Image (cartoon, rainbow, N blue to C red):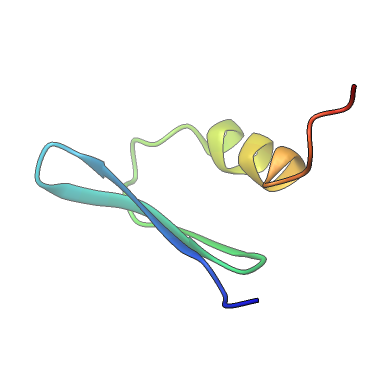
Amino acid sequence: MAERKLVWHAGQEKVMDSRGGTVDIRAEWLDRRLAFTYALIGDAPVPR
């Protein structure tokens, strides 16, 4: 499976991106809990 890259924007500003298991936060004002939560949940399948 190919590695997926997600890029998060606020307006024209790139604020966060993720590749594989790496999350890079680029905006000082971004709440780090968002990146932490995304890393925990990721693309895990939804339990039934």
